Length: 467
Image (cartoon, rainbow, N blue to C red; front, side):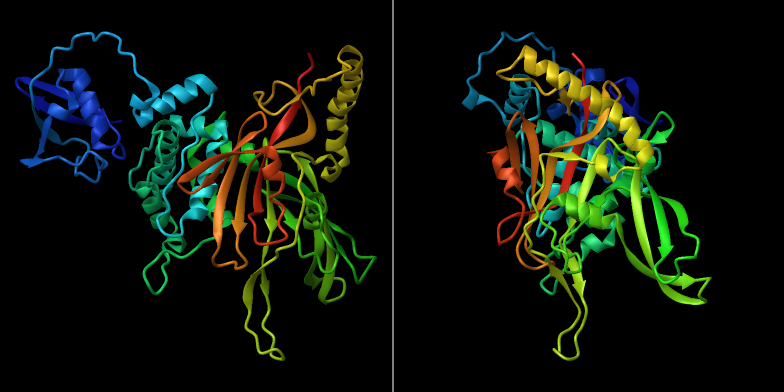
């Protein structure tokens, strides 16, 4: 814990601080101790007035152990009469609170683009849709202000808090600055000094890898519990059938949906996932004494709470001396349909399938009973909102977030985030412009033209909740 001293009149306060918190928060703490309203406080550090409340304490030079002087007169507060405000008279923060009280979810709020930061804006909006992550971020307390991983975790929490409470679009200066410091790739600029367009998937991966060590639950990394798949892999030599196959265990935080499948058309996301779990590679063969072609196949042995699927739309096309072209990063525009409810049972090991079959067989029995009890409108007894561990797994996941890319170039275009709000209503986050759209609009994001097309899909595990 870090503390500073604050002298006011004849009193001296010992105040606990977090170096990454803003000066405005310190003023609120001092108000509770002294009764001096924040706007009436004059804070001095070594004779210098602290007058930029948006700075962090560290940026303002307020280090652990320093002593501040405060000037100001305590205000006697009188309990005000309850004031009735019309909606147009409410502040943005009050409107956000009223929306959450009424709808039970935070008001959708956008982020201002800082010059090709749409890749980050859309990614953060999808992360905000994961309540287990936002709760863990809210509990995080940094212990080393020089640790960029901790600082990024802290700033991500602050960014999501502002998205939930501000009630109006804002510019994420602190988070973008920290992200670019931690990962210089995202700080690259063009010849005009404008930030380059970056890859939303690279942004997502960088953020998750950075915050992972800081979010621990029950002795395990929360990010692993939320997103990590475990696979059983099999590698066999295609040129020597007598060579013993190699078995292994692999991990990843997303499923790959291969679209450009070597001449085999992919029309459904499930076809692409199947292709992504197999393939061929070249490696040295001990039995042949040379490089050989190997067939690789994988089956899922552990399902995470959230399934992130990346549609591999960006590929490298090699240079051609005959055509006189250079190697370029190209975009695959092909239309690939995806489901609102994704069934991963077919991609699992036999052992895991047997475990999932318990819930699937129970679901069939309960559904038959529902048809008898409620023939007009049988209920779906699977839930994608229940706390994890409170129901029975079936291998089904429901879509809750999408990141799309619009444009024909891999190095330009525009990213947009889409997240499920409630029932059949979604939010579309086009940077600072936010609108509500129906589920049918989401299912149209399959690609095939110049419209927004799905690049990252976020699914939440469904559980059977017997009534």
